Length: 99
Image (cartoon, rainbow, N blue to C red; front, side, top):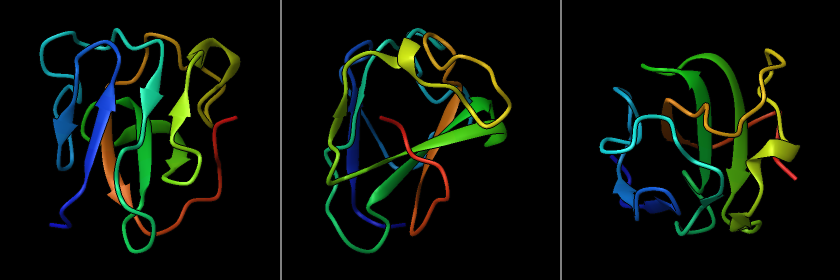
């Protein structure tokens, strides 16, 4: 697994790929996210609507670093991202990015 780190204002942080619940102590209560990983290989965090990397997704590149208001973003399935992220993983590429 790549050595990256990410974080969320709701939980204070996580490491690796979060498949089950993604945000261990706070469930899916994230209103902002950050990518404190490294640019390059596996520098993108892919956030999912469902646990175990299911449902719609949206991504955050390390160069973007921080999204302060998830209510302005939706997953690919149309669901609002605010308080709805249930899992995440590090990826090399993505076709959908937050703003």
